[in-house]
Length: 392
Image (cartoon, rainbow, N blue to C red):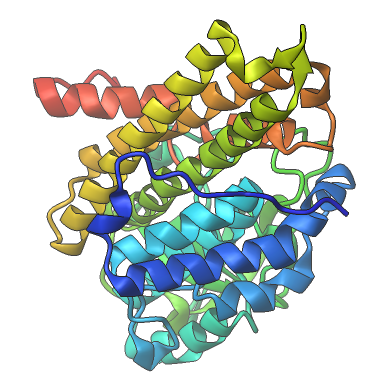
């Protein structure tokens, strides 16, 4: 079992911008990843299985709803704390971070923000503890970047509604106890509701054959005349405002998480460049390798500054969706480019499970697409700066 030799890198002394609490939270997550994730993650990625035994640990480090108030089981922490936890988890694996992101930003966040007090008390404590796991149903087989075209719908049937449709590419679906689902009501308005495992007609077939996020469970949500009590519907939110606000929270976490993947790649190849010898000396002494390494730490440092500032704005409730989009797009693209360069520095060893690079690279191919594709985020920024909608 490979020892996790990771050392953090802070070229611009970013720790000086963090509080003592931030650093304690981050360091606890880092040590947990080293102890409980790194030793097993290659094995689980190779066999395409999510390690369910780590769910309890994710809860213990505060990865489930860190910014949800303590009265509902959350950590009551700020947004920078949330980001730092996501960074450390994704340093271990993007799929594990996806599991935590979905639970926090796509399940607990909408229940807390849009749910009734009864819904909050029923679901949030069990989600925070990891007793229940959740998933988020927005994307459909024919509607990804255009969620408003969804066909999943429900019809009024007295004290309950009848839900029909299907969702695709849903993280956590195969083992989720609850699903936050977005569907159109009788008036064609998009509404959110909580669907529970065990409701007749609700199934979650697993997606197999993935080359990416192999240590994350992905599946579908299928609704065949599912009876959902009306008390499971979010009472006031209508339209895309609901799901898009959830995505903003998730994208924010991804912006931090991608830095973790990039740091792991950089740390791995920096150490390799100092130990691997060719032509009689360490390869880190050659100009082309130094160019790659210098560019990596430069881009990581820029991303760290970007997310820290975004975290400050998020804490002040001033971060805009477009600002979050910019950070998600930039940081994931940065991470995937670093993974590709790191693979080259490792040479043939870069494709083996002895090093984490190829796993990170494959994972990031999903991260650059989900929660808004790279190109869609460019259009969000473009519309924000020009005032023109280029989507249609």
